[in-house]
Image (cartoon, rainbow, N blue to C red; front, side, top):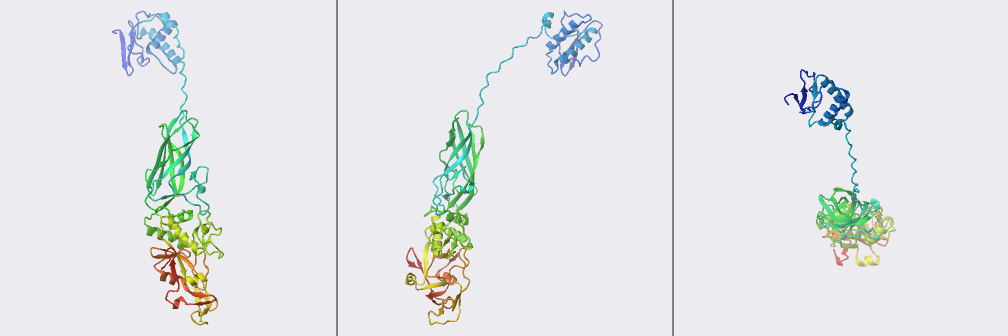
Length: 490
């Protein structure tokens, strides 16, 4: 390499042969820097170049240097010009490798046959599923206000939100359910699909999980029963809605959404001791939200009665007391079934008692108010419900006033959706629980005892067309209260 002039730059060594007396052209270094440390072929002539020799040397240099360019034709033209210039000045551009024979150097490069790609494997498609049905189990059936129990399954994708079935569990219970999945995109092969659903209930995360097998021909796939990872909070509650977000993981490819289902879920205090009428469980669970004791559930469940604006859940009809005054409903079922939503006092007393039974509370009793039991059964004497105006007496004691003239009815105590219920009765029904009295028909209570209730409700007595015993001047008890379960006087 003693006769090779070298330039070192970022590309390595660039070599030129220096002929006797030859002068390197100015700027030779940067022209072909990629032809590094090339050896000189002794056979190559140094006389005036002709086109054939320039082409040969250019091709040899290009092949030896491994020129790769997006514009190879122009690169080769530039290389030819440079080779011709170097040859004219007496310098021969060197290249690496043994000197090939000229004919071989000029032979066109053989083009290898194209490589045939291997047959493409069919694309793998994984299942895509969506929840179309949710079926709760171990729950307490909710009755649709005299129309029969709600349908199961409780949730279907084909139903409107208002038509989905409510669900009832005892507080603190775990929630088992099963799901039906619609295969929206079948897989290319049978594969396992994980499913999970998550919901928040009063700050507690509930999760349901399972694994199902989905085949190319699957249309709908049913899951096994899944039980929530945690129990419902240990309080009375109405979860409206309990929203479950469903996700699926097909063959471990990652979790994707599988739909969202919304449910109306009631959590009652204890196992129901009677029919879970929809209106009763809805009113009480909303009113007693967060409660954990019987006493608080009773008092909070009664609170909405004081508004005198209760509504039947199934159709939004307002529930009334003697409005219209032709009502014949005397129990809960009749009140819930009546077209006008009107009931007598007996139906309202049982309405409250049955509401408490929804929560497993059986210690509330129906109480009948009468002047005396014989007077009630014979229809001979009754009582005047506040308010009445007592004018001057015109008759001998004890029935001192003529009805409607000597004693005049005034605006009285409003009842359920009725500002002026009938002003006189032979009997009335209220409720006793824990020694306290509740009057659901009027939304009154709790009253500490019979005397307190009577003072607030009764204005006197009547017998046929006469009245007497105005309460304002007769502090003694005018009526009797009897527990209808024990047949004991209160």
